[in-house]
Length: 635
Ligand code: WT7
Image 1 (cartoon, rainbow, N blue to C red):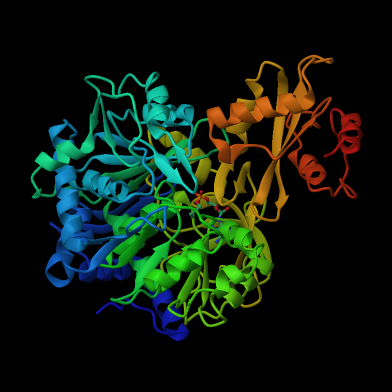
Image 2 (image 1 turned 180 degrees about the vertical axis):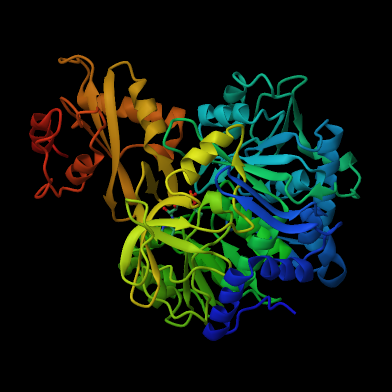
């Protein structure tokens, strides 16, 4: 009998050791006992990181939605699966039971099929955090279509790039979305995007805000009438464990986003098993992850992981500051939330406000707190621990990535003693390595290096859509036989891991992974700009904010610098979205470069952080004189 639940530290170590010594036996037992398969695998796993090729549960057949919905119906059909908390606290909450979820997913699956979506087709989902988003994701999975959810804060250009990259034939969107006191016109963003997406044949539109929208004849249809006519029974498509379940885009070090492709069998096993153990979910608990389903956190820990465990998962449409800074805690009290999972940036923003917003509410239901997306600083950790957890709820600082599919480093609550700012120990089955710059593994305690993973885990991404070479080059070429995460980390005297941050050109702003390259590409398209470089600098709420160093084309550019700054940010908003806007823009005469022409971001980072006392040796630069000019005018 495998143990699905880790009860104490000794047991953690024992299970961990087994998962490393006999990974195949370990995952086979978990897969066998806790999931329903239509056909058993012929081989647990096979791998070759040099290609890279990774296969889990080879030749097994399943449908993930049968695991997330159907199998629960006879035991917990009337239990709430999705608890929808709308943006407006006065609007009615929705309790969607497993029975209702089944019906809604089947109807949606039938609509997709009637509209010509077939197994393997890609469907783009551009929706706010409303139940239809989860339902559509599951409906795609039910018929074997590959969903590509694009966060509904991305611009039309970013949306078009993502639609075209994986040839989506259908887009599902809404007439708009509610974000605090604002509404956003999603449909017109889609309309603009689709001017450049010839492959999209149809658009289904959810009515959410009752706004007037243009419906293009022959392409656009309201979803509800189609659902009304659809049957509420749908036989799930039988999928291969390795068939792609979804594509999710993440930034890379070139302008083009990477469409990470996730499988269905391994992804299901890993997200479900991590969810159960890392949040210590018990049958009658109410679990809330505040992320958006547009990010991987929402895929794995709002939809698939919780539902595979028959959990009640809260979906929140709003923002933490509407109608006031107490909204999170109001919702915790209202639904007696037991597990609460959020981002450090949200904690920092709320910690700035009066504790009255917290103290008004009864938070005694909370048993486990979680954070994800970026390193949590000590101050925010203590605020969260003291004021929200009342020193009683352990904080699980969970490290993982879009590429890893599920949580890789995290304490087990009530099992692993926590230390502020430490993600602590590798999860079961996760084999970490710290590497030095010469490609040597750093053994032992108290070392710091680049974080790598030496052995496959079931939820790892299998490829980048349409570019397997890029998948290899980005993750498997830095170190032989290792997956390279792009993060730095240190291992302390007790073996705990602390993530020190990105060591590549990715900057994490408010928990969002932004590549420098796409933002620089956007800035450089401005007619007045010759060249640019952006770096992150410490920001007390966002963690990092963006600082742009921009060289203008002609001296004597007639527009006022502030107008230019606005235009540049406007352009970034159009190309990528408001999350990528720059906090500071400094116009500079040049950028410090090595003799081979590489921008020395290290120096720019120091300027942005106002820490230029020790710049190291700059005499080898191509243009050491610009450094002084940059420091003189630093913002
Ligand atoms: C990058 C991945 C995982 C879902 C959300 C982000 C950073 C993530 C932590 C953490 C320190 C963290 C890393 C990672 N990160 N979690 N607990 N402590 N850093 O997914 O957009 O793919 O970003 O987020 O730098 O590489 P993502």
